[in-house]
Length: 412
Image 1: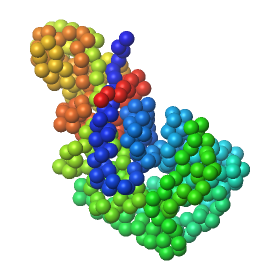
Image 2 (image 1 turned 135 degrees about the vertical axis):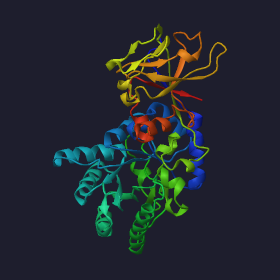
Image 3 (image 1 turned 120 degrees about the vertical axis):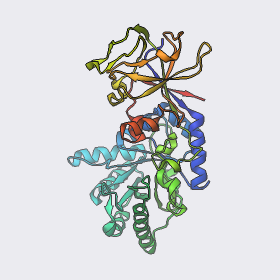
Image 4 (image 1 turned 90 degrees about the vertical axis):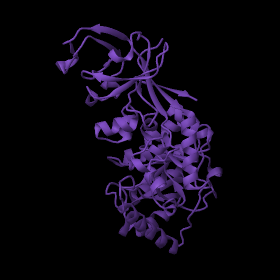
């Protein structure tokens, strides 16, 4: 039974984007693919197997719950947990989080010596090693150690037994912005900290990290002796494509570019970057109405002629924003000798339904005809990037808002 709309996720598009990222980063540079927020709205059930098939070395989540969910889904390679995954109201909550993180083999970003000491105690009790990463605030102003305090704190963290520092990283605030210079300033600050740590004996470079066994638990023998050094990493999607190669360091963290979208200057969009998502459905109603007919909540649209209106089963409950009312476009797919046709959204977007004007689409439009709500052609008027521009937002928001009623399916 067909009900509602589908998000078709192209495996080949993601594979192609991965190849492009590796070309930019260098074939031997490990990737840490951001899969937080249900793989940026593309669906973990679809995306994770593709990343595994393509040999992606590590993935990143926003919090501990997401990270543990990946273990349950069968991801056995390293997981970097961003944000403040060990933030807790009291000692009991902190201990419980540390127990889950260590047992799951999760690389958690630590925010303090106190968190690291608790990880150390828990890892000793579990007979294994806790794996941590440390974030530096080089100018984002959000999370992380301030750069002028970082070296002393990191040296103390490194003294904790049963704890291994897998990586030290920072995040660029402006790498997508036209004419950006601040990201270079951030990189210079980060490299200064790396230099100071190297002078104190910190080895840097590729680290094999920790691989959990198939049960999701740790394996002490597999953990010991595998670290070749601390991974220093900074490059997000914008930096991978817009900053000099020196920003790529020991690992890169592709996010939105993995899924084929671009938020940098339009004239710098990599030509080979392919959007992975196409949202499609079928018309559930086709209605003939007279001229001067009111359409939708608030009667914000009135037909100027006898018109044909179609109903698409998607609305703001599915992430199709109400701000697209009377302004967006959809694509009626080719059928019965007719080519693809662009059709405008008319009236207000409702919770579950959106109305399109089919009057100029031909005389033989029928219920169940396929309609593309969001196109995977970046040049289309209803692409993710076009919708983001129309809404005055970024591509991340458009894909992340696609709701749970929209079933994600893998296509070639």
